[in-house]
Amino acid sequence: MADLSKIAEQAAALAAKAKADAQPTQSATVDVEHGANVPGAEPERKRAEVADVDRSMYDFVKPEAGYERFADGLSGDVVEEISRKKDEPAWMLEMRLRALDLYERMEMPANWGPSIGGLDMGTISTYVASGSKQAKDWSEVPDDIKDTFERLGIPEAERASLAGVGAQYDSEIVYHNMKDEVAKQGVVYTTVEDALHTGYEDMVREYFGTLIPMSDHKFAALHYAVWSGGSFVYVPAGVHLDFPLQSYFRLNAAGAGQFEHTLIIVEPGADLHFIEGCSAPKYNVANLHAGAVELFVKKGARLRYSTIENWSKNMYNLNTKRAKVEEDGKIEWVSGSFGSHISYLYPSSVLVGKRASCEFTGITFAGATQNLDTGCKVTLAAPDTRASVDTKSLSKGGGISTFRSSVVVTKAAQNAKASVSCSSLMLDDISRSDTIPAMDVRNATASVGHEATIGRISDDTVLYLMSRGCSEQEAKTMVVNGFADPVSKELPLEYAVEMNNLIKLEMEGAIG
Image 1 (cartoon, one colour):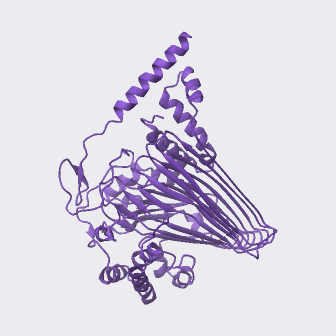
Image 2 (tube, rainbow, N blue to C red; image 1 turned 90 degrees about the horizontal axis):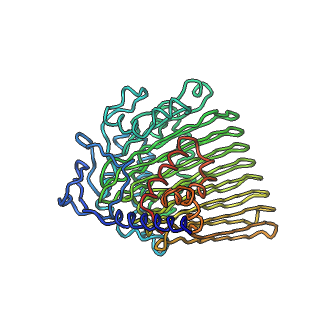
Image 3 (cartoon, rainbow, N blue to C red; image 1 turned 90 degrees about the vertical axis):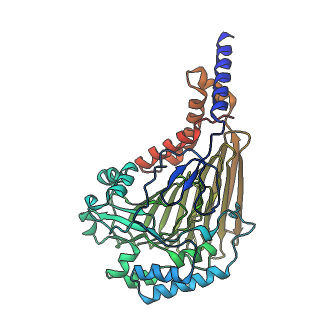
């Protein structure tokens, strides 16, 4: 009885401390030009406001002095200037202008996911660049940009276990390198811009914009009008890369958009693991991420695409990702969504060849001020195709996490099989979790299943762990890490560590 009394006293003390820690602090606005927090100051121009949050791991800011920044908003002049800077072929400029016209005619998404009414494109700059040339040697990268990526662990990861690295800072790639032994196998890893000027224009033109058409939705049209940066990867037939390729996207500028385009072609029998990471410092103004990822997995090829997104919580993340998988090919998605204010993110797989398969493993963590609408889409369009979806979501502090899935089985998909599993854990009684599955099955021989579980951390579990010497916060973090462990195991080591650090950061002060 005495032990239980001490445990109760400890729990009460921890709850009181957590309540005190959760009291609001004085807010600060932002110096838009220099990215500095200025207490009581007004921003240079009115932008969408979001609540300030603590993401000190990623919130360091570099000044924009000397940077080139296009005027806020979108116009034909802006689009033409982006194309001119990149010295693009005429067909690419024509594509950009068609996309701009379509963007201006399309309506904003309505009655779909979370409201994006706070996003005003008139206050978003679509192009910001440091002016530094792309470097192939780390010593050539400007010191302020180098410091940013060193603090994010990019050079260490490259030396340890990567076949190639690309680093994008705002709108442009600032560093790109690939190991000689990888290049000797015929692997191409560069930017889309460089691919247009180094003998791969015909290949880019054949694939670019064919899997994600500009008419897909309004922000796809916006993307094709102002895209900049990203990666172009070509893996020849039969080549198996022993180590991953990685791209890291850092958005430093306040009130800016990032619109990178990733185009990957994995030829028959080849194997590739591609990793992308994303982060940005916090601002009290809206930022936008509207990238696009097009993946082509040929006959008998395999592609694993791993992502950890920890954008700041003023970010509108409206990214579009899609893979086309041919006969006996396989696409594996590993996705971690931890940041952004609003997210629409549904990686899509189109299985067009016999026995093509898809595996999707994902985790989403929605904290205070976050409304994350995530999930995946799969179209099974050939006999004996397979799809497996396993996702986990966590919400705390009033955060909203929505899992949205779409499974389409066409008439041609004889004996197709698909299973969808979604588990949600709410860490308090003010957060929310929803599951919205959609299944369209048009072949009677198909087998399709869906299961979902939603729950909270058991008080008995927390009490037991506290009786073994854990604090309340440590106990809950242990439960959350155990819940997330199946996803963590699928990530590369350094990203699994990063994910656990993010969960630990988000759990600070959690009660419920």
